[in-house]
Length: 207
Image 1 (tube, helix red, strand yellow):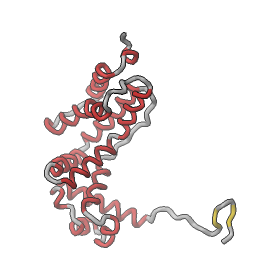
Image 2 (cartoon, one colour):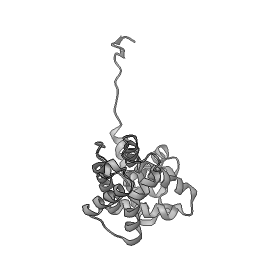
Image 3 (cartoon, one colour):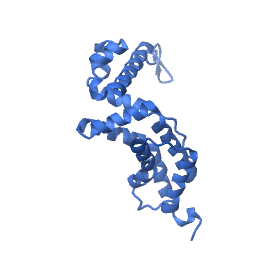
Image 4 (cartoon, one colour):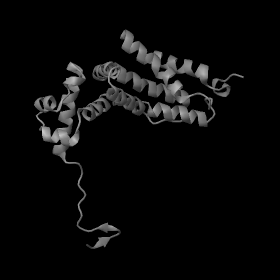
């Protein structure tokens, strides 16, 4: 076949099949509803097919196991808008904590999280999925903390996982245990208290 500028002539590159995308979205919506209404055990290929109208063959092609479907449901439930880091440590922490707050205060995401935490306590497969969601959900704040270490704003000896716990943990605890809410002032204070404790002197402006 003739080529022009390294590209094959006559080859058409097609995007995602719109019908497949619609089926996938319908299945995820149905699975999300089942998870929130009746828990993990309710998310089966049979139940999702019945609610979404998507054939079981299609479901098995996308998600051979129910756990894979639930993993994608959780990823979808926990989606929030993130702002790219600017290099301003305080501003970046506040921005990312605000995104985390938005997720926690979203009723669908919160319910999905509660279901997963309950299930993970007794089921290793669920625990692995929850750990994966946690890892993906904290990627940006991890990046912010690691970059601050490189810039000399946070001690290189500060464990990144511990920093994430200090930043996100209070909101998670307050929401899941006490059904608490938090405004912008709470988020800002959380970031400022973290910096007052863990930022190096030149960042705090003290000797």
